[in-house]
Length: 281
Ligand code: PAF
Image (cartoon, rainbow, N blue to C red; front, side, top):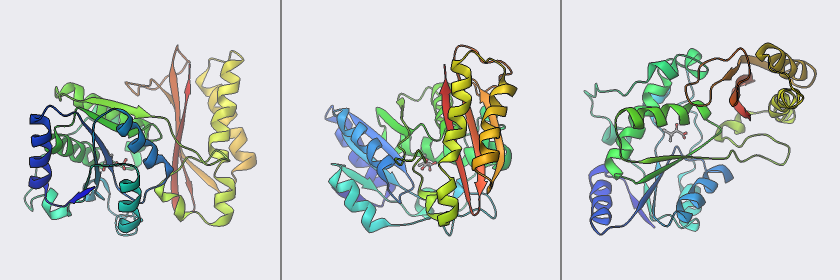
């Protein structure tokens, strides 16, 4: 596996591979790898492509007072994991190499980002979309792979790529969970043992809503109430930030469950802010 820091070198190599007719699959990451990241690398490998993984803790997607400095960083371990997963290139740029001091150009998708996580993190998705578009332009990848845990992120990136005619397939991969149901996240390390014990109840609450939907309930408020009732009993340390039934692609709020919808939530649990979702169809 090659480890490249310089964006120009990375782009040069990708362009050479493309010129040779090779297919390129990109997995954008911020490091601190867990089995969720590994599953994205495995999916990229299975796509019969050169596998490019970017490891960049993107300052532009952290708001003031957020955990940019504290975000877990395990670069040596990450390189071992990427190497073992058969990654061809690990791209690890420095922030100043990705953003010129007078950088002023942003990719913004307001219709999909002024809701859900965007309410408490107003500039977050602008930072995500901008860095992902930069990575797509550097790599010219045919395929880019993201986890479905960050459902809103995936929807926003899909929309930006479609609206800007970026010639890439954006693919989502299922959330990887601990055996007790907690979605894997690099930020789970912030949980105390007591918070960690309650954290799986986040998904369990969403499953209560899904069971009610399977029994025929269509009202969003009734489905929300089922999740909240479960959290009240089993997740007392959690502070709900939002819980919402939305269309999977437009992220528009739904009062009534249609053919397909996603129930998405964010809950603060001590220092951690956990997000999760469930598909209801
Ligand atoms: O999901 C992440 O880890 C990040 O938001 C991403 C997509 C790598 C952009 O920095």
